Image (cartoon, rainbow, N blue to C red; front, side):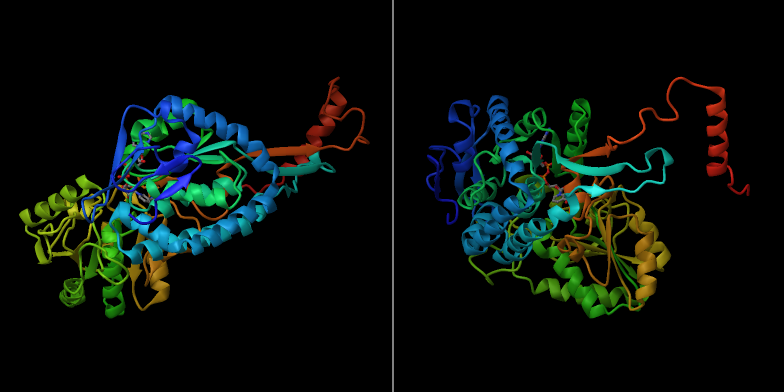
Length: 536
Ligand code: NAD
């Protein structure tokens, strides 16, 4: 396994044979094996079935020790200021570019995704994010002078300050080990926090490799630590941190929110989706078909904002289905053996392939037609599902209402845009959406009527790359958002500071002793200030 054979502070993450020898490199450099918990977790390459490494399943004691070290390291990290922290992030950006092949191989080895999916949606995201937060953190978080219309604070200095929360816990899913696990650590770190990342037990290796990279770039020890383990490790981490940033399923997200509520710490949740695409009769069909295929099959459909269902106006339905079917038929699926070797990679999480097969079977059982694909790919060492297009679908079928998270594209005929918008909104989820039409103004209007965190017109998913825009889910797709000002301010407390000059009056007019004359005067003043509103 290229990419994760590394020696870090006495911990060596071995490739083969599966290990745990000295444990999982960086994580274990931070947490002694003695308290690492009872069992190790084997990491499988889903494209080959090989076990490529193993990492410790950390217990609550190990996590508590990590938290103590993270807290101790945080004040000095914060004291470096924005410029000092930005220097480390810019070095990390360069490190990522210098080590891109190694990071790609690590991602591919634990997810089974193609080299292109690792390159375009992970490396490029993280590289951009290092630079973005290095550049913008100060602007988003620097002390702000605030003006107030309140007469009682006239002449005083009002400041809004963002103070790092201290220790942030990030919990990640398996589908994007760099973008969706490590990626959220970057703004949390730039805000001046220490971070513990609990990556998915299915894909922990990339997070560990990034610990090695950050250390090489001069990140002080224990400011970024990786707590490998299963759900219990994540739960133990929530007990320790000052804020939790969670990305994963809606089911687990609810549990995380409950635990955060019990501890009264903030949480930010990026959860599941069932993103709709609407294709109107006047759309550029070639572009719509190409984007439908790419954004439903890219990363083998294992993207929270994948196109998961399509609504097409009746006059163009047959043509659209046949265009998409032919394009999907041309996709090459199988073990990624280097750039350009396949288009669609493996199904990363073992139970996911059963969900995909179940959704397809449920749909065909209720009358849907598979126009291409429809089965697990047999005769391979790894875990693959054929890129699949379904027509004749409706909302009685799971493939149109539940998150499938696989290379499937169900396409439903609708009579008009109104029906499409109604059906797009008929979902517990509200993550992303897209509308295709040559009428940009109409597209924009329809976009505003879709209850989703992000909607693209004549595009899909691309909003995610614009880190200036907030990205978060509506409804059961999440709470809060990443990116933009809110994507870093959430890692801080807000503190209001009011500074009154030492030359101020010895006693202010509203204070004791209360006198009828002063009260009447203030009453008249309030009437002048607030009593002139129109009565409509
Ligand atoms: P999951 O909810 O099963 O697991 C996510 C993480 O939570 C893992 O690290 C897991 O170990 C941990 N965990 C499990 N139980 C826990 C508990 N009780 N307390 C704390 N942590 C616990 O999700 P998954 O299967 O890894 O990821 C796939 C899901 O993630 C999909 O639903 C997908 O849509 C979603 N996702 C959302 C986004 C987004 O930005 N909205 C991005 C990527 C993935």
